[in-house]
Image (cartoon, rainbow, N blue to C red; front, side, top):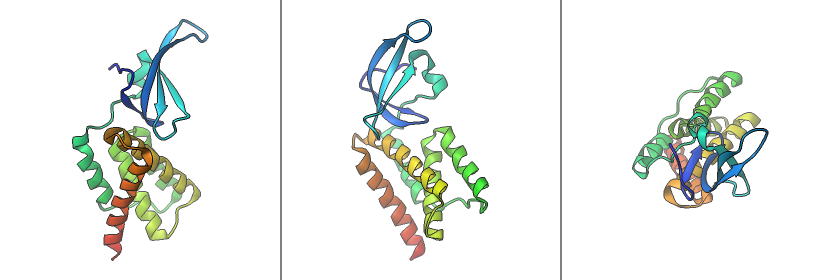
Length: 169
């Protein structure tokens, strides 16, 4: 799969960004061509992906707008019960994050949000995983909707609060 300058793409480790240029670089070997991707969630950060490695890296297009309803259903849904033992819990969450699949990451965000509500806080690791996951979803949502990441994060928070609030009430 090849991408074009100006296209929004999703990197499984960094979230969504826009391809700003395709450039040729030389580093310890033959010259290679790279996608230069400016991250939506952190415009000061540029990720370089070799043109011949986009599939093995997992670079993909954002989900289509038509699939946003599935994202909202996941965020409003009932949480999966996470293990009480923190190492097991974070192994489950990190497994979902490593897939790079928006819907699995949404499950992780939902489950951590519910846990935060239930326990009144998350551990340091849990908080970091939650923020990372939330940023990932928000960047892809912003790319799909053509909005900024802060607005996308607000939409996600609104869905989570409505779900958790209705269960607590």
